[in-house]
Amino acid sequence: LNNVPLLHHTIDFLQSAGVEELFLLCSSGADALEQYLHQHKQQSNKTHENGNRIAWSSKLTIHLLRFTDCTNTGDALRELDRKNVIKSDPFILMQGDVVTNVDLREVMEQHAIRKKADNSAIMTVLLQEVGGWGLDDEDDDNEEDDDNNMTDSENPNAPNDHHHNNKSKMMQKNHYLPPLRSSTDDLLLAMDPTHANRILLWDSHPHNSTSSIPTIFFAENSSHITLTRNHLDVGIDICSPDVLARFSDEFDYRELRSQFVANCVAEEEIGLQSRIFGYMLKRGEYAGRMGDMRRYHRVSMDLLRRWGYPLVPDQYNHSCSGGSYHEASYVCERHLVYRDVSGGGHGDNGGRERKRSHVGRSTQLSGPLLLGPNASIGEHCHLQRSVLGPNCTLMDNCHVVDSHLWGDVLVEEGAKLNGVIVCEGAIVRSGAVVDRGCVIGRGCVVGAGVHLKEFTRIT
Figure 1 (cartoon, rainbow, N blue to C red):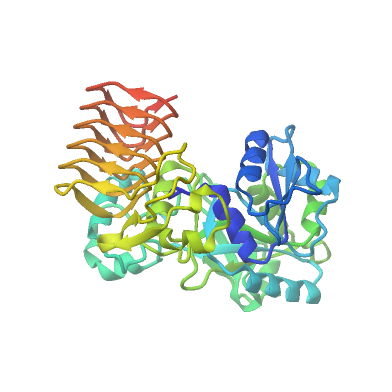
Figure 2 (cartoon, helix red, strand yellow):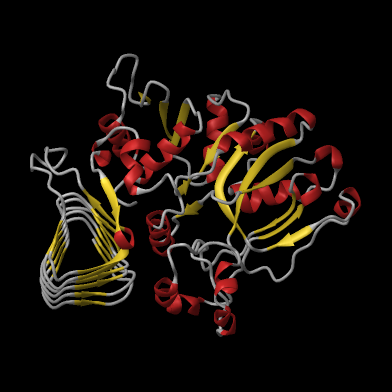
């Protein structure tokens, strides 16, 4: 994401929150993760380390847990409880696709106070208000126009900003679909705002036409119940160890949200209730999840628009820990164009000298845009809302919009890329056209003059 591995974003975020022990649960790819962690850790001392315990820095130790037989979240949490390695109360449970700048210390403090007063308060779910839910998928057709009309000062994920600032959009056929929400995301919440936003209903099934709330909740909560559909599940929870014990007791729970949370908040018997609360992100706090290509691109652009500060490229070398990915030193130029200015030295580029990106004088750059180290762009090109990784080369007359080129990518003369991801070492030959949703795998070659239709995958 923006030339930094997503795992690095996660580690830096947790380290800034004061986390001292991090447990990575993985069912596949453990060897690659272990190799990456050893290569990019900040702490060079390897004493008292083994394959599953890595001293990332002087303040953080990472444990790699290989759950190869787990096929769902429930199995992984039951296995985690069986190993009895979680000693912290509370602990942070975080999904692997989350990018955020929220301050977790306040959330954990509030959770601890509630837990001390009420032993049944076992979990706090982080939520972000992002606006209403779109009626159909045709909203995607207007995304490019939305981006073109958006100023840098407008938050694209705010619940009412677009409708308030541009009333004409209210007259469009389709309702506005906030960028951070999946087209299948349909979360209905019932909360009691007078009791720390206690969650009384969690319905995330998009095909349900009706939902029900036990009548006892109306009496217990003095009828102060708010129904809402404009909140995004951030993917971060503050949990007590009771959560793991509940999963071990209820062996049929497979999903954390649609089964565990939904059933816990619906329990009517007071003595058996497990209370779950919601924490609403404040103004200036950002969170996004990358469950698909659309949201991956939107989170990337939000960070380049500086909505996730300090998760911005010109702060990477200050806020991120270790590793060659942070040797680049970016500056933010006009129109949110980020360029690497750390020319000189060799870094991790196969011995090649690291140079500042080169851009042809006749090339048009429209931000948000990120140009990585050693990027070379020819004449008469057009680049808009895209990210170029290290050592990418674009020849003359190239057209790249809403695309991500990960590194060592070659795009030859006259090629057009619109809404695609191009992995390391791939080549797009002259005159090729790659339409939105396409993914070109590592080392793959798109031939000259080839036209790839939408959502094509090449591996």
